[in-house]
Amino acid sequence: MEYHLICLVTLIVLGPQVVFSGNDHYTHHRGRSSLDFIIPNNFKKQSRQCQRFSSYFCLHRYFIAVENSGNKTTREALDSDMAKFRRVIRDYYKYYNIFSFIEIDSDTAGCCGYQVMTYMKHGQFKGLSPSEYFQRLTDFSTEGKRLIFLQSIFIPEMCLNVITHLSFGQGLFRMNGGRYRQPMGIFIQQDQKWHIFHHYHLTKLITFEWFKNNVICAGQPWICNQTANYRER
Image (cartoon, rainbow, N blue to C red; front, side, top):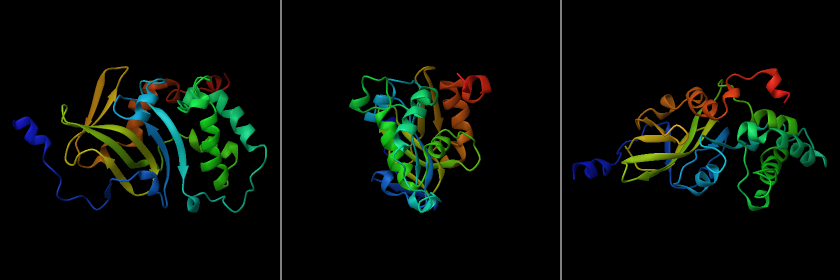
């Protein structure tokens, strides 16, 4: 009984930097730019789709608000943009876990229709060339990146909010899903290991440096030890 009562506690006061939203976080994007990640698990549709390709993470997209793009009014879209981006992403998507979950890519090992459509919507439309968008999409440097979005689902049997999506970049920190005042957890399937975080000060605990070292580089070790030879493969 005591175990279940603990899980029923609700948060009364939120810190001023946190907005808890029941809506899809993509509608709250003014001023936001971020790398968006999906965490593989069995609890959300996209997370289940991700785990078909990786036991660590899937890089969903690079998102940038129109007012942040800097290039919106200075670059015109070119007819060759889609083909150029397709050629680049086809060569590198597996190295960065940029997988497609849509049906048209089901016979091509997770590439490249979704990735091209994502570039068109979040890159070309916002004034970015194929190379500029790809550079931002694969920029895993830690400078200027902080946790700005976290989505989770509460699992009563575990008394835990299981994290399904994370975004790192610039913008207002928001959370979606989960239950107030319960700990957050990321499960690494390959290692059968949980990383548990107290619900307070999440932006200080789940930094991009931590995520890169413990999740990204666990799934793609070369990213933390990359060499020119690897990039030329």
